[in-house]
Image (cartoon, rainbow over all chains, first blue to last red; front, side, top):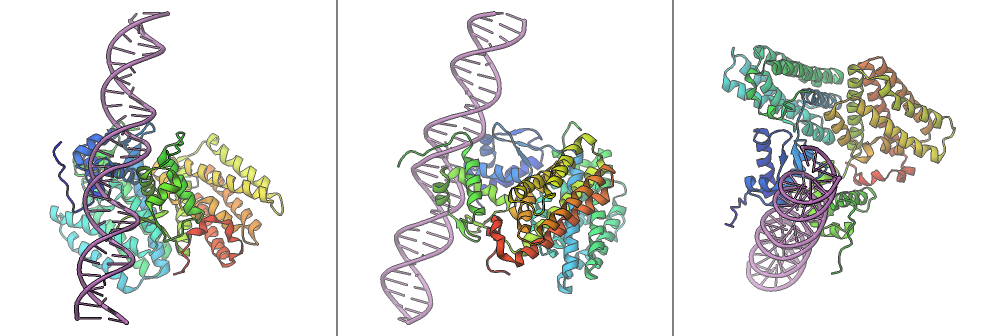
Length: 250
Length: 250
DNA sequence: CCCTCCGCTATTGTATACATAACGCATACA
DNA sequence: TGTATGCGTTATGTATACAATAGCGGAGGG
């Protein structure tokens, strides 16, 4: 066989993992479908060992499921799984906000959060929001959540939140995109921004319970809106993660 | 070289994973120590491929940490990491209890929980509790927590709780054992049992908030007691997981 | 005497060959 | 005609050979 083209800039394992994740999230591999190692070797360009490592990592990430008789299949998610994942992340972020508030955060550390807040305020001034601005919003929102998580200064918690966000529909960007299909999108973003404002205020004033409560409400809002969005399936092709939803609703 | 002795009853990957986990939790491998693949091959009896798969899984489990330049080392935990992990699990179990309460649970499903409760009541009648009884308590308590988690009927949440319990000191059995070193051990077990009783009652009566609150209090109690136990380091060899604590406190 | 550079060694990353188990198909018998 | 059994094919599980890199030690020069 012709010699393999090898990209030496990143490890083969990482390359395979990224490629496979792409295939899953883009819908090229459908939920429930078995992933053939040989096929993965061909599509990713890595050999079987790194492909297998990538498969194990993707299983731990939650995108794949081990088949008892051997091998892996693409995991399928119910609508309930998705809303639970969002609420789960909200709960963890609530704990992170509480930790941040109770343990104290310097003004210096809150600065990046406030910058995000101001930048989002700026974006939301547009009515209706442009496509470009919306895209910036997705980025800024993700950064806000990541920085808030960091403020907990709790490696175990940060780790769990990262894990909970691995499922794309449970990531901050994921459900924002889902909500964008709704007619009330702009109003939703404004409410969400209010949550952001409150959580910063609560952390500044060391009100742990309030900081936690608002993050949980933030997630519950997301869950409600995701449910709405799943009713009008019109623009949902915006959300690639939807490729993971079980076709047969249970 | 002499032919390798192969145990064909379980996969080599699983065998290696169990063996390595044992080595880590028994303290044979110290925190911060690099794990050599070759050495692991010798001690586990598996070859490099399954050993590598096991290492990846243990990393995802949180027992190992990837070294940037390659390979893995045993993760080291601070005291704060440990108490955060317990509080984290308590928060997740709180959510599980809430889900169970809000979504409704049949009397049939609560039966196993009540059996655990009664069995623990029986054990606690002994004053002071015997070593054997304490060992039964550890098992029953772990079962209680596992069954409660199941009642949430939320696969993503169950998965996260399992992950959060992977760290041995964050598992139900782990911190019970740590607490056993305290002079107030018996009193603590009685309070914990009261929590168990309340959460069942709350779930039965569909009081989600109360069910959640008591599980969080349950965890906070554990955190307080673990702190106490770490002060009197006398009997802490009871808790193998302590092998994971950073020697240099930071 | 110390610092730097080169080369060696040890360990990980990758590829592939081999073993084994599962699935499917075909054929034969009831 | 249907079912069961056996064989073949294909996939995964395992082992090992090869490649590349990082870390360490020694030697040489400043």
